Structure formats: C-alpha cells, structure tokens
Image 1 (cartoon, rainbow, N blue to C red):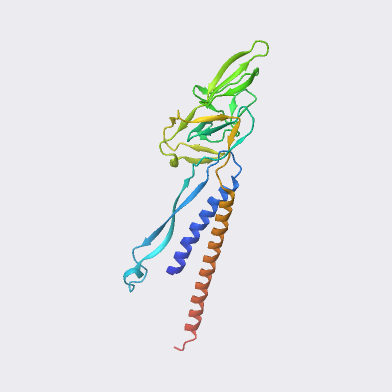
Image 2: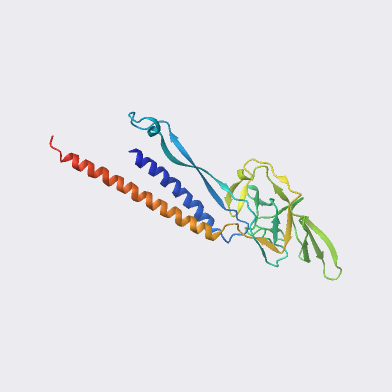
Length: 254
C-alpha cells in the first residue's frame, strides 16, 4: 500500500475511535455523576520511507496515533432534588458500592432504600459505609445526612429517638486516571488501594450532574465527521489518480 494511503488510513482509524468517545459522552449528558472522556493523539514518525531514494526530511512519514483516552474529573453542576437520600459530592471523592465483582466506585449520588431496607445506588448496588452496607429501618424518618456523610434518622413514631445508621464511605485515589470505567456509571480501582478522603463533603438533597458540555461535544462530533469525510475524499482522489496513471501507462506502445 502506498504511503499516502497508509497515512490517511491511520488518521481515519484515530478519528473512528474518537467519534466513539464523543458519542459515549453525548449519550451520557444526562447521567448523574458521569465524567467525560477525551482522546490523546500524537505524531508517530516512521524512521524511513518505503523507497530509499528519499533524502533528508522526505524520509520521515508522519502517522496519527491515538495513544489513549483520559477521564475529565472536573466537577459537574449540582441539581436540587429535595430527596433526603440524594447526595452531591464536593471534592474528588467517590462513593463505594458493593457489586458481585467486588467494591466499585461512583460519583452518582442518587440513592434510595430497597425492599430489604438497604441503602442502594441507582443501579441497585448496596452503598458501603464506614462499617459495611448501610441498613435502614421501616420506622426511620426525618433522614439527615451531614457534610461528612453521617446518616442520622428519627426512629419510631411515639417515642422520637435519634439514631445513626452509618456514615458514607468517601474514598480517593492516588492516580484517578488509572480508574477503569465498567459501565453502569461505576469505576474499578485497577489494582489501586482506595484512601479515605476526609476533605470531601456531601450536600444532602442534591445530585451532581454530568460534566459533559453538550454543545462542545456536538461541535466536536461534527468536526470529526467532517474530517473523516475529507480524508475519505482525499484517499478516493489518490486512488483515482493511481488508476488513471495505470490506464495511461497501459496505452503506451511497448
């Protein structure tokens, strides 16, 4: 394959992967606590061209290489829900939930109590407190969640007794970019050990919305689509030139 086609193909492959990232961001623009992903690109230089008669800078071929994606952990806007179980995290901490695959981490603070009385997230996974899963009672009411995550309730109807049901476990990581998205708005630690985040605070009755900027992402999607189309047209023109050259050479008398 000619050098022009190889370079164009490398760019198209990178653009195809970038559109997947952008499309996922757009799809989660209304997902609570979702963090956008961005693509990283770099120039990859081949040491030599296919032919040896090039000299100097003409021997360098510049391909496009998409190295990786990175998480944008910028704080998303908060929205008041007036649900006493909802919490928005102010800081870089994550809530801990228990899944069949082990502990996972999320910024989605939309919580509820399931049929067995456990505090769970929107996916139905139990929320892990400082001393394990948080269990609520049927007679609990007037739920209060303090800034440090302590959950206090008024127990009973005749005799009002204040009781502590647990404390939300807020954790952070030394390198959050190594966290792996596993779907359902959850992250896995990827071998890292979570650390208690005593600086983070929670706000009761609010949820953190997605930090995706819908206008920016749609603009980026249009730009990527146009670039892909332009490169396709360029490669088509290159193929037409090659075919025309071969046809003309075939008409030359031997």
